Image (cartoon, rainbow, N blue to C red):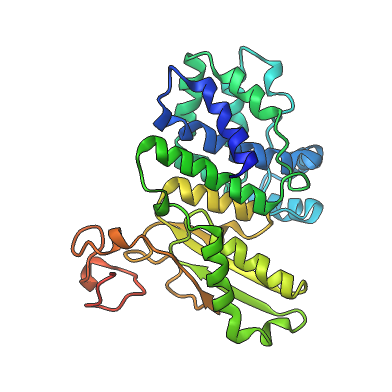
Length: 312
């Protein structure tokens, strides 16, 4: 069990009454992501604000921020968890401002419809209490490793699904199973992967929360710290997509490499080829012929699956 995940999920007890248990995740997941990004950005906020005042063009600003901080994303708001609670009357509006001022590639909160939840929390007089609880949790990568953060997300998702009577397997794959898949994936290429400065690409067409991508990169860097594994993925579940993209953002990866959508009907990387590919697709959904996934090429505009080949 994830100790961190259990602690974060315990914050959901504050939601009892206005929220049903199967709704807790709509608040807990986006706030966990927001707090993780908040902790990462905190050391360089003044630098980013100065650059934002100097450069109006978002593309130029992104370049300058990357030079100054080493990160591909930023937030130009005057608010953060450090000062949100100072204005009790303006907390909801200021939190919305904070979310809106992330760089364009941080679109993850849209997939939670989180602004609606902010309004609901404010009306229920719970917003201040929940923000106070998350402010007390330090989720900086120096304190919480990427692996531990991944475990925490999986725990929260599992609790969310249990409350909603859903199948958690639709959203994540157990870590032990992923490690076995990674070992098999790289087994025949071990010698090549030890070369200094190698660059390889890995694609997961049903990326989920990004667990496979994360552990594959971890495995390769353990073998060869000088290697670079560029990670690509596509995911159809909005919340899983948001978690996956946030995780890669936190690690400094290119966020545009993670796409939202159905890989089988609209392949976001139709013109790309990759060195490695691994996936644990939701087979029950994929086997629905002429439903959500159709065998006929006319229904699949840009698919990696050949005409007449059923997804199952």
